[in-house]
Length: 272
Image (cartoon, rainbow, N blue to C red; front, side, top):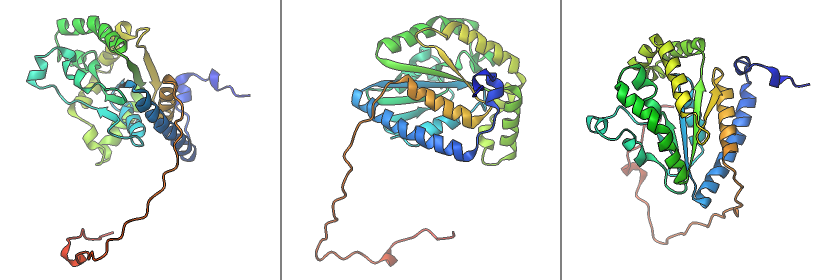
């Protein structure tokens, strides 16, 4: 008898998953993502997926697995940097609006307008008045998006203090990951409680019926990726579009054409 339903989420999340099973399930899900992409193009859907959570919670990893098998012209990853002085003077949501999808597109936001409810709030990058205004208007902004025909899905990646500590340490030790650890990330470690309070307050105001927060337990990265992608596929009903298998036409042979010698070209040295 399978008692997995009785396992507490935080304990279930820590169970290991074998690489073979993970790769097999991920491959299946990525095939389904391609089918979903084709359906979105056919039906001219507009899809926005927000990925939020603590630093090192695994948002980037799942975004990479979603986007790597999709057409980058259809599925765009939006990861905005620090706002410029001009952008700071604009309506807060203004710089996010140009990144919203047109018909037949998917926009994956690696952090979003919820920066104001998280890092800006905790680090005092915004005033109390700006924060309060965001909390009042954000639900209305999202309802406007939904009324315009956008499918809005919001994921929050939940990671424990201990797991975040381990991931930060691995970034320090691995030169290929060190760029992921910014001074802001290090400072956030000192403000764990502040981020917890900010997240709870954010959920209080923005976890609405029209645009609910969907929490992904993320102490186990592989399980989090599979669970999140599987859930995303379930959120948008789609059907497989049948295609005829393409046939490659034979190459034309041009009589009298002589290719220039390879010695005229500059090649990359083959060191491997």
